[in-house]
Length: 92
Length: 178
Image (cartoon, rainbow over all chains, first blue to last red; front, top):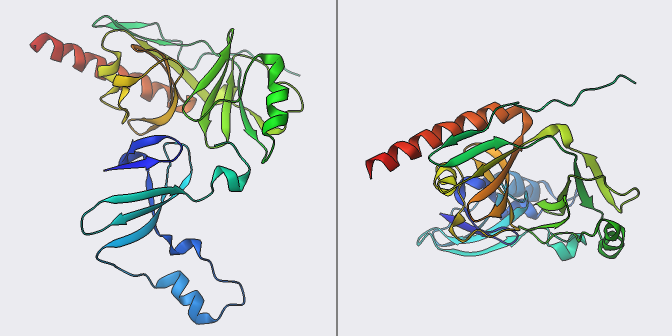
């Protein structure tokens, strides 16, 4: 399996660390109802088909990546940097 | 202030197997430069006296013996020279944190193929790639298609050397069979 890192190009899975569902990016506000926090911390979908999760390019550029993939066909549809160079004002 | 003596990580003599040589590069000054957000123009200006530009991902730029090698997102290593004062960047001295090895020769790529998950067949001078040497963190710089600089954590220098030595022996053994 390879992920096409937006900074480094296509790289072997060994360079990456799997973090979990991309739902981690949608942190509820501190005063959100308990149900929202329960969903955020504990409840995950287990879709047959399209899913999005977070990977960390640990042995590479150290960027967090949001990977869109298909759990049925194993196709990797998209790999996006969570913090884009534009958003962070950096240069990648 | 005590007078500190710079010591090489290994002090190992170069090793040549199957016409391919593994050697340790001498200790040099390494400075990590992580530009502050939005500092592109100011940084380019500040680097001008060195004759360097901030490298694109997977690249290094160089001027004389001084090199600026991309080493991660929004970060590059200045190798072999003094960082200018007041750079618009987070600047840290990394000189004693890394060991630098050189592997060069016709079997260099075959040796690295045993540990490094990169396709180096299309490697060309000027590339600076973050990856792994087996389990060790790696910054690999391509000097020529059959010559590579390998930087890993200094604390792991002996492991890196031992594993590369082992792979060189195996590659030579395989060559004898074919």
